[in-house]
Amino acid sequence: MNELTSALAAALPGGRVLTDPDVVDSYARDRTFVTPGRPLGVVLAQSRDDVVATMRWASEHRVPVVPRGAGTGLAGGATAVDGCVVLSLARMTAIRELSPQDEIAVVEPGVITADLDRAAREHGLMYAPDPSSYEISTIGGNLATNAGGLRCVKYGVTRDSALGLEVVLADGRVLNTGRRTMKGVAGYDLTGLFVGSEGTLGVITAATVRLRRAPREMATVAAEFTSLRDAAAAVSAIVAAGCQPSMLELMDRTTLQAIDDWKNIGLEPSTRAMLIAQAEGSADEMADLCGAASYVAVSSTPEEAAELIGVRRLAYQAKERLGQCLVEDVCVPRSVLPEMITAIEEAAARHGVLIATVAHAGDGNVHPVFVFDRGLAEPPEEVWAAADEVFRAALDLGGTLTGEHGVGLLKKRWLGLETGPVAAELHHGIKQVFDPLNILNPGKAI
Image (cartoon, helix red, strand yellow):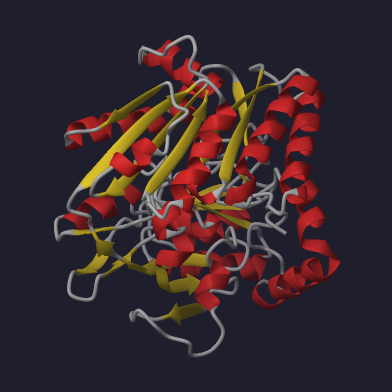
């Protein structure tokens, strides 16, 4: 340890600070290809007091701090910067409270998303946000990026389930935001401000989240199409008909082929897209609205439903088998989803790039995954060119650069196209209020 990290270790209980270079390196990156900087060390926080002590030390010595959950982020938001301390919250795993009567839970940031959902279901409740990485991602990371998931079409993103937060500020002060009630409008919405701030305004050490009644009966539809555009049109028809699906997921041929090569799902040669829809009660109307489908299956048991949805959850891992991935998440109004799908296909063809696309189609959130050769430090020029075209197409269609992954490092070069100079000035002004020394996750998000 050097003098700085020795002082940090002295401020914390034994064993909380790691400085071995090989160990520190394993905490320095997220799930992207981004090359991290060199951290001074890692803090393994186990309590709010550990976070407070770390931030006080960092503020005193003006050392950057990069908060980290499970490292499953896809935008480079948890990537270490040179001379920083990585603050890992993965050991803060307590569900402090679960109240079936009030339908809330108070959880620490290291709680795995699926574990909270399982705990809630023991009481007939559920935690609605469910990113595809829900078995490995943490609540803290979900809050930091305002993560979405498969059930967003009905229940919204993480911010819609966040009622209140316990946050350690850059100087070590503790702030409590929000409430335990379903309603509350006292003061500015600081909870909403911190959710999605990517660790640039404060470190979340606990959250009061909303739970919902778990549906008693769910029906699942899987429909295969010979045209990706026909599948996108079926999405629009299901939403327009008022079916209120809790899940409406789309996968293109490239994605399906990657899954089939890995798991042998029996993919037909003519299938160009698959739509997986789920709703409470009967699925017959959704099945009927997939009129252009070449094949439609409706689950008859919970096990069959889980199997169909499991295919969708395999998508990212299957694509990682093809090469390195630049994973994007543009979001457009649902009415122009077919146009967005077409724009992605045209960009892939024009630049000769392999793009595998999945979508939380019910809310217009499209994930084009740009696949490139392993071993490259970053995507080649043609991948960036195709990505640029996709981002600009999303904005032209009235959409956004990111629906749920966050800006991180990867999208900063395009952020100004969406926000404009006035919003950028306000963002930096807010950052200055909460973090005047610019030590919290510097260089990310804004």
